[in-house]
Image (cartoon, rainbow, N blue to C red; front, side, top):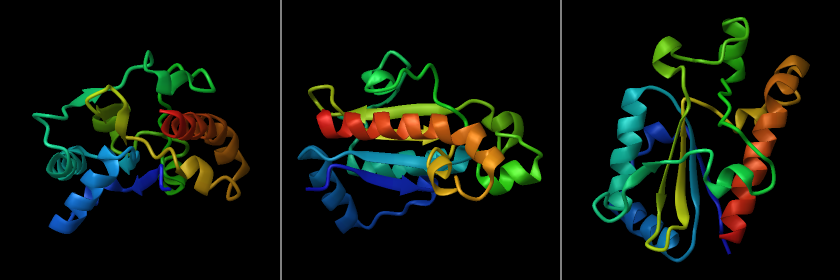
Length: 164
């Protein structure tokens, strides 16, 4: 009934013990979580700690997701995960995409799979894919720069989550 959960600013997550148990149950019965829009090493470490409480890394290791993964070609062919900044950073920086300079120059795409290899958790770090959907009406230049790729990624992730 709930095949997809989308988390924004996932690097600030702090799950209660009850939420840990509920999320584990949800994922192991076929659910899918996409944790997006986290920037910086603290956010990445915090998210990995929180999701590690849900899915212990000894049983469910976090692995890099490369462009060879079916997620990158479920409907659209995506050569690499785009770096999409928040619209406020994009405006302030004059069109920059790396919100933390050289530290966040490259998007990190990782995931956690179940025992059969089905991706249960997708983590996109140093990008804000969903801003491509949320902000499309605010600025035509932002829309044309980021929304086509952001929608392609979103559709691929949704199709993957619904079919795997």
